[in-house]
Length: 186
Ligand code: GLN
Image (cartoon, rainbow, N blue to C red; front, side, top):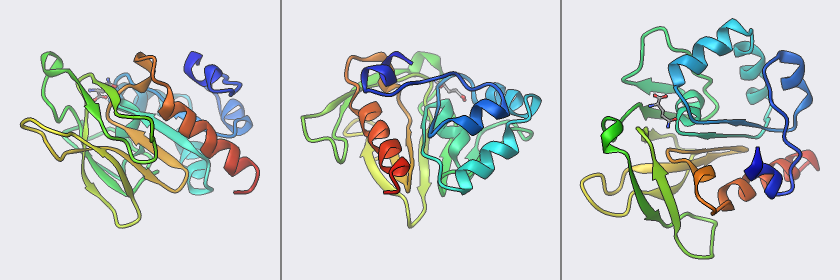
């Protein structure tokens, strides 16, 4: 909420279908994707959310949010739901366990003011990106070099990492720009 406010947006929390209907875009935050999946079902948000994504609503998913936006999820629970907002296969907990959480500097396509510090917390990676999906960032070095960790398809943005936990809010700024462009018919 603070990051979006900083970028000039007017964020509200979305828990109900009427609240979802009122927003111009949606951030699906980090957390636990299987729990968020259950809550989306319990609160009757799953189908309304799928419908809004099909109709082009801008969305940004980080970490668990990226998992939820995938069209296919590996290493999740068989009953976990996903939203198919991006044509991609995402592997949950791909970098390992909680202790394998890490930080690195990424080159992020479309952000020109130098590399971005990225914080990965039991993060997923994108194992397959569909032909219409733009790869925005990959892991630069180490055993996971080349793994896709940021993508965009249409108005939907997803990152494996948590850009809200550093002071660098350029990804949120990019998302607010996407929402503004979509609202003005762009
Ligand atoms: N491992 C979590 C999941 O599967 C995601 C972790 C996070 O959002 N930082 O949903």
